[in-house]
Length: 244
Image (tube, rainbow, N blue to C red; front, side):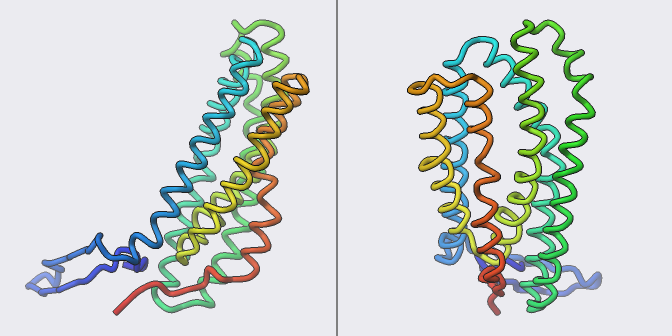
């Protein structure tokens, strides 16, 4: 195991086929709790934040709710490609870190960041190219909802770039080196100190137009990028977590 949070201890008893016969993983290890509890907390913070997005949009009228629902479905489907790259980056970088190849892991990290940037941009292009098909399926929407959806899809196209980068760096590369607390702090501040309060003020206090509120709510991935880049360049995530 290249991730020491599992503190995997092997007792290999080699048979005729040279296959491991015993494999024990101790999930009660304090290292496991230390590295994985921030990931769990991060998912809760992130999930509750997105629930608040739906609450805010839900108070802006039926046309806004319909357009937002379709835009989010399309955005999440296309984002699966970038999320897959993010998951794979954690495996690739974690394997090198666990093998002690720290410079190789650093090199992989840089390449994966560039790949994720390209993947995010391509995802945005795919979303825009698929817009006519999306509108064909959503032809029963009111004219107002279709106007909302048109702009929402444009906003989602740039959102996918930030989503791709953050999925690779924060959820993939940083976690591979056990740097899980940064993601928790970053999402907690972005969601609950900046985006959710701004969205609520824009919707319920200033009564700004629907598309302005939607734009604000989709700034979370872009707002994180400067902090994520700065933390990445410190290379604190380059750590071998394995134990003998």
